[in-house]
Length: 289
Image (cartoon, rainbow, N blue to C red; front, side):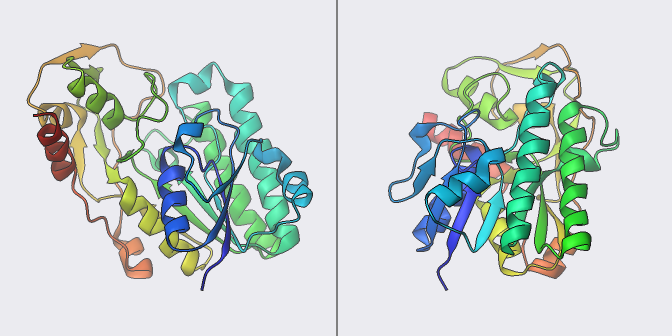
């Protein structure tokens, strides 16, 4: 059954992959994105885009007399290290914006699929950066709205996503894989932060999209970790490119370890990651040769 779907942050990296899939599946898709991280170059023909902050969601949708059946909420501040210097912006996007989205969903009885951050589950705890702290607060808001008001939701934790449109930010704060790919294509040394021994779980954007859609089709007020269940050191990842590597200073807020526990996600949603990091990097290398 085709639906009316709203994607906040739908002009960003993961959002664009999700919007493209939802549109290709025949859904009527609207996007609210303030273009702080997304860009117009990512617009998909046939999708309706509104350049606005999520904190204005109610007036924005009322003005066009349109109400979604499902909300995918991806439209938040999403950079760790800069969040220390941009804490007002993090609060504005992640707390004010998400509060408005939840209020709108509650009033209109619309289920929400929330894109949470795996930084909340890190060994360092949820307080190791403004970004992770405010993302963790939104998780609690979503769950409390379920308890207090009967909000229907799925919470999906992302783990170091890579794939198409990963160059959306096009700066030093984009994804690790986005940075490595750009440097490799430009024949530059890959920059490894710190000692490179910090470990990460990497997940393909197409797999993330499959997980988000599965979570929207089985709303159970549950949390799901969308990862491969396999971790690599950053140095190991850089070495897969078989090119020069250079080290740069460690960054504030960086965590040492992160791997998804995917057993519950597989058992509950029937979802698992299909793309492997090795295969993705091999495709990049073959495309350059």
